Length: 113
Image 1 (spheres, rainbow, N blue to C red):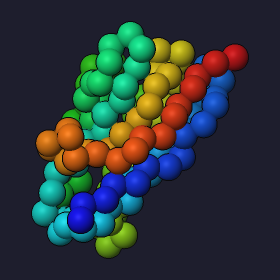
Image 2: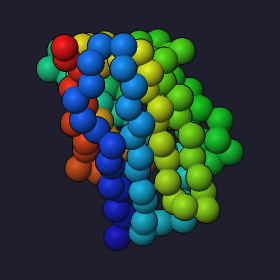
Image 3: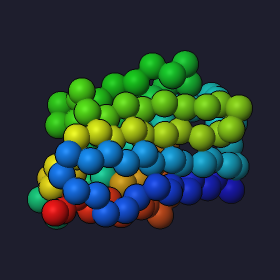
């Protein structure tokens, strides 16, 4: 069955960086566009980035210029490099298929001093 497993979250100070990863299985990875989502107390579940099978990526305005998505089709993995983090970035981060209900268990990111 489809599995998406996120990792890389943690506690970081404002201005710091984290790199999240998501390993996928159970489907033909390089045929699918994937998303990064996050759930925050303020906004609930929101889309923050999408990455096509070609590697072309798009971003929500709230993260544009700070976050960079990438993928390695040989390793069935997508990544999210997050720089210049601020407290509003605190939340649970998920990778998902285009259907948001197909997502992993999430990884917690906390930005706090």
